[in-house]
Image (cartoon, rainbow, N blue to C red; front, side, top):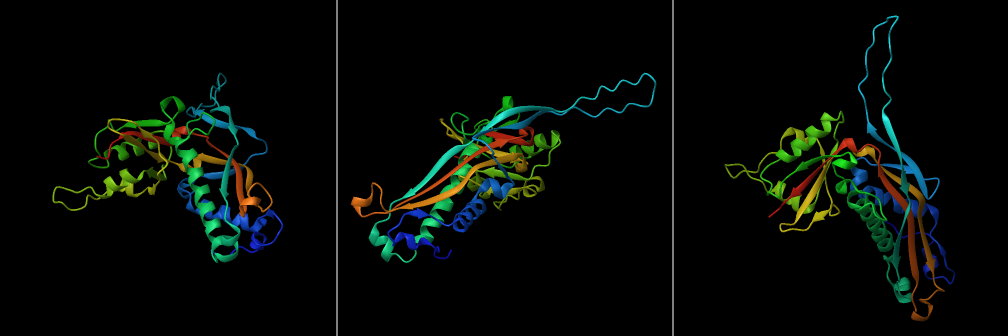
Amino acid sequence: GRPVEGYGMLTSGAPGAIPDYETLGLIEQALQQSVIFGAGARVVPMSAPSVKVGRITGTPEVEIKPEAADRDLTDQAFTVVPEEMDAHSAFLYIEPTLEAAEDVANLEELIMRVFSAQLARAIDKYALSGTGVGQPLGIGCMDAADGVSVVDASGAALAGYGKFVEAIGKVRAKYHQPSSVVVDVPTWTTLAGLTATDDQPLMAPKAYTDLSEYVSNHLPLVAGPPMTSVAAVGDFSRLLVGIRTNLQVEVDRMGATFKQGKIAIRGRMRWGSFCDDPTAFAVITGITNS
């Protein structure tokens, strides 16, 4: 990254906001680092703090009826349930000293880089492991009652890719084409270290390698013993991230930190996440990496 133009406000006397083109660049960096956006999640605008979004809960088969006087068209529409997607506020914060603002040549670059990384992690965290209580319901916390398919690894250590192939099959059985798989670091490490009977690395089956593989530290963990984790397989274009307020970064030299010789830099963004078709996902539960 390059030094931020307009960040002269760090060493000038006036507080203010980071120029719009800089915050847009920060958002772009965050989206590039985000696992769910790499996997295919989509951005939608939010026109209000809470908006209704349709979730598909049933897709009946199309019926063919030949021409006849007594033809009775009983085709059913697919079922859409309107649900609320709420905007949640997230804050980023740093308080560099006046000396740091004057003397650290790459301070602006570091701030923008750290803010973008924090934002990417926050988006991934709540879209993958949000509990749904005061925060979005993440894919990894959904169960069969929410519409996703569930594959139970039964707490056994992974010895191959069978559970992932089963998850892919469940998604395909719901007429979706899975595009990506998201695993946590221990699961990725276990899969990467699997060996065949000749002690050579175990080759993943084509069903798995056809997916784009992503690694995230923000999949839910279930306390044990043993401690288990989950993985998610699916069509991530069915995962929406609603943006209510684009990222705003403000700089203040005159607030509570004035007497401490510091500058307050705050970022704020409001967003929510929502899965509009849970049948496009399968969640593998009970993964143990011992």
